[in-house]
Length: 573
Ligand SMILES: Nc1nc2c(c(=O)[nH]1)N[C@H]1C(S)=C(S)[C@@H](COP(=O)(O)OP(=O)(O)OC[C@H]3O[C@@H](n4cnc5c(=O)[nH]c(N)nc54)[C@H](O)[C@@H]3O)O[C@H]1N2
Ligand SMILES: Nc1nc2c(c(=O)[nH]1)N[C@H]1C(S)=C(S)[C@@H](COP(=O)(O)OP(=O)(O)OC[C@H]3O[C@@H](n4cnc5c(=O)[nH]c(N)nc54)[C@H](O)[C@@H]3O)O[C@H]1N2
Ligand SMILES: [Mo]
Image 1 (cartoon, rainbow, N blue to C red):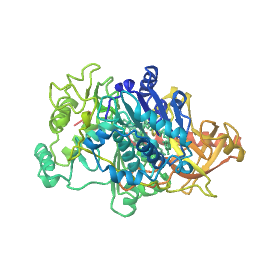
Image 2 (image 1 turned 90 degrees about the horizontal axis):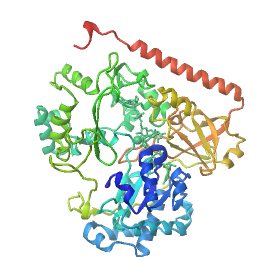
Image 3 (image 1 turned 30 degrees about the vertical axis):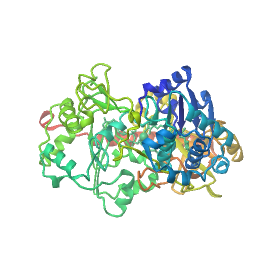
Image 4 (image 1 turned 90 degrees about the vertical axis):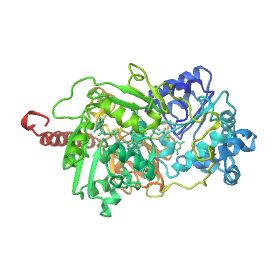
C-alpha cells in the first residue's frame, strides 16, 4: 500500500474495487465508516451489493470478470473530461502517449455491454475520484487479483492514480489491502520464489553474495534463479519435476483450485512433509507432520497490509510436542549439517531481518513495545517510519518515474455455456477464516455458521431451478462437485452464484478452475462455470451431510492420534 490504514480516515474519497472489507477486514471497515462520517466520498465497484455499497455515494454493479474494460473506460473519462493532472504526468510518469493509444478505444458507452455499468454513473464516479480533495485512495482486493487479467488490472489501477494525481501526497494512492494478518510479512521475509528477505532479488549476484556472507555459506549454495510457485505444484508433480513437498502453514487440499486433481497429484509424491498447528486435510495426507506452536504460544512480528510491523507476545506455554516454527527449521538445518543456532525470536529479528534488510533496520523491539509499531521503510534507529510512499511523485523505478501501462480486455478463461450456465465466484464470509482449521475448531464460531456453508443465488436463478431458500443443493463443474445450502439473496447478481472457500464438505474448490496467469500465477478463483440443482431428497441429504462431516472429523482426529510420538529421553534433545 502506498498509504497507511489509519490515514484512510482522512482521504477525500475511497474507491473500493473488488474488495469487501466488512467481511474480510472489519478493522479497515471501521476506518471506512469513520472516513464517511468525516465527509469522505465512497465509491464501490463490485458485482454484489456488499455492505459498504450501502453507505456508498456511488455503487457500480459491474459484471464479473469485466475489470479491465471498466478500468480502461474509467481512465478514458479522466482524460476526455480534462481531469488529468498534467504536471504530475509530465514530471513523474513515462509512457502516457502509448498508454492513451490503448485507453482511447474504451469509453463508458462502448464498454457498457461488457461491464453492464450505466455510462453516466461511471462518468460521475471517475469525476468524483479524480477531483476529490485532499486525496483519493484506490483500494482493491481479491476481486482484482483472482481474475485472469489480475496483473493487468493492477497496472490499470496504478495508472489511474497517476494520471489523476491521486498518488504522491499523504493518504493517497493505491491500497492493495493484503489478505492475511501476515501475508505482507511473509513476503517481507522472502517467502517468495524471486526474493530474499526485503525484496532483494535472488538473481542479483551482489545480493546473493551479501546473503552468502551473512549466512556463512559459499555463494553457489544460494540458488540464482527464480523458484516455483505453489499453484504450479500439481503440474510439476505430474511432469515428474517435483517429488518431495514441504508444506508449511498452508492447507492446499482446501484452498487451491481443482482439488480433485491436486489430491491425485499429492498422492504421487515420494516425500510429503506438513508443518501446521492442526491436523488438516492436507496434513492427513503427509508422510511426516511437524506440529508447530500457534500465535498464542509464540512471539514474533507481523507486518500488516500497510507495511506496519507489530510485535506480538506469547500468551501461554506450548502444549505437548509442539515446537516453534523457527525451532523446527533450525533443528532441521542442524541435522542437515548447517549450523543455524538461535536462542529466541528477537535474535532472529535483530540479527537476520534488521541486519539484512536496510528498510527494516530502524524497527527495533523497543519501538514496537506495548502498542507501538513501525511502518517500513524505517532505515535508521531514529527514523519515525513511513506511512506514505512516493511523496512528491518519487517512484522506485530506475528513472524515479511511474511507468503507465495499459492492456486490452480479454474474456475470462471459462465462460458459462449451456451445460454450465452459471458463473461461480468464490469469496469470504466474516465468521470463518480461509481453510477453517482454526475457526472450524472454535465452538462459538461453529454456532455462527457451519457445514456445508452457503451458496448464494439470485431469486431468478433459484426460481428457474425450483430451489427454495435453505435447501441443500448439488453444485458441479467440469472438475468436480460439492454440496451446499442455498441462500436466496437479492444482493447477488443474476447469473452468478457465490460460495465461500471455507467449507470442507461444501468445498467450492472441488469446482474451481485451475487456470493461472503467466506472471503472478494466481488462480482465477473468482470466475469459473458451474451448474446447481436442488437435491431431491432433503431428509436424506441432511443426514448424509452430518455423516460426511462426522466421518471427516473422526478421520482427522484418528490421524492426529496416530501421528503422536512419545518423546524419547524426556523431551527435546
Ligand atoms: N473473515 C475472513 N476474513 C478474511 C479471510 C477469511 O477467509 N475470512 N481471508 C483473508 C484473505 S487470505 C484475504 S486475501 C482477504 C481478501 O479480502 P477481499 O479482497 O475482500 O476478498 P473476497 O471476498 O474474496 O473478494 C472481494 C470482492 O471481490 C468481488 N468481485 C468478484 N469478482 C469481481 C470482479 O470481476 N470485479 C470486481 N470489481 N469485483 C469482483 C466479490 O464480489 C467480493 O465482494 O480477506 C482476508 N480476511
Ligand atoms: N476458491 C477460492 N480459493 C481460495 C481463495 C478464494 O478466494 N477462493 N483465496 C485464496 C487466498 S487469497 C489465500 S491467502 C489462500 C489461503 O489458503 P491457506 O494458506 O491454505 O489457508 P489458511 O487458513 O490461511 O491456512 C494456513 C494453515 O496454516 C496453519 N497455521 C496457522 N498458524 C500457524 C503457525 O503459526 N505455524 C504453522 N506452521 N501453521 C500455522 C493453519 O492451521 C492452516 O492449516 O486461499 C486461497 N484459496
Ligand atoms: Mo489471501
